[in-house]
Image 1: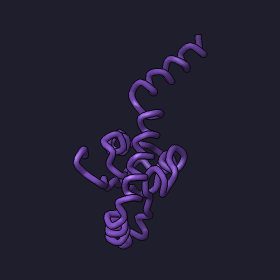
Image 2: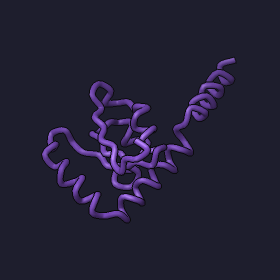
Image 3: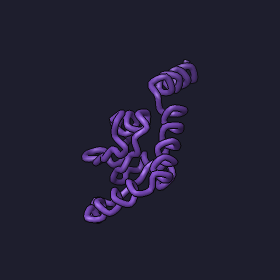
Image 4: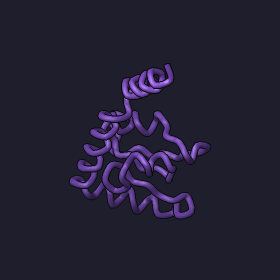
Length: 107
């Protein structure tokens, strides 16, 4: 992932979830190109932090990839935005802090 400009992701069984694979790709500064999931839509801006596609229109993928690879500025912007958002909000330390917050509120 660290040497990839684009990381292709398919949300096979968790359409309402977020996988570590997506976050790792962002933290490696790779642009995530994924099919839609509710969590991706809620946590990231399509076209700004990552790129989403519909499995019903999977034939559009080659063109999306070609266009992205031809636009280095856009590729760099999405890569930076995804990295910054994942780094700020989606590291293991963020999950631990949230867990402790929930635990404190229950005690």
